[in-house]
Image (cartoon, rainbow, N blue to C red; front, side):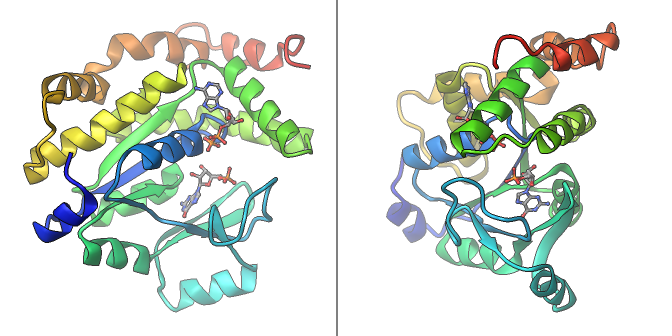
Length: 257
Ligand code: ADP
Ligand code: 5GP
């Protein structure tokens, strides 16, 4: 893979990657791992009106701000997209895209399904990736473990995020690539393969001796090729088959307390 400097010298057009997932699926974890492994991909630090969680720092995970300031930014048309999620505002500043483009870097947006729809409408060339948890029970366990690690389990907030998950998952068909974040290393390798494959197809970036395997891994993640892989996940979320399954799995609570 070429270094960021080499990419800059070649004046390669940056690719816009959108990644969405129900909260707790492991999207931030995947993005963090990807950034350790690949250069030349910037991460847009969003603005939000929610309060920081756990060890989150201002300007690192998010730019934390007030509702008044956020509304002022909307009025000044400073956002590429923005949405209300779980009662808080979230948005991507336009300058994130300008800066990444200026540097010839790819840009990764971690945004919800509403924001993704807005970006796709204005930039249909964006590469979109949807991350699914393997089943509702794993999602609940991850959300709960994360809350515990942050020192506060808010049952109402947990329930809200779980209830929202199935509704968000219904949007997966709007996305080009689908990842099932079951085994972390595998999901990271798939995400990396998608980025490398898109660089190869769009910009002619060399991907060395691993190229064939990388292209195969990425192709297998295309939504069009994911029907069989997704079947058990969609069944577990009650989106196909017995819809009562979803309620049952969310409420099974004995193994992670
Ligand atoms: P999101 O950004 O989608 O809300 P996070 O990245 O915060 O989710 O992950 C939620 C929790 O699940 C975290 O505690 C994280 O460490 C854990 N997690 C993420 N991916 C995996 C995985 N593949 N296997 C096990 N735990 C995971
Ligand atoms: P969390 O509060 O768990 O960090 O994020 C909640 C949801 O907000 C996630 O689905 C996340 O992708 C989404 N989100 C984070 N930043 C943005 C943003 O800038 N725009 C939009 N539309 N959604 C965002």
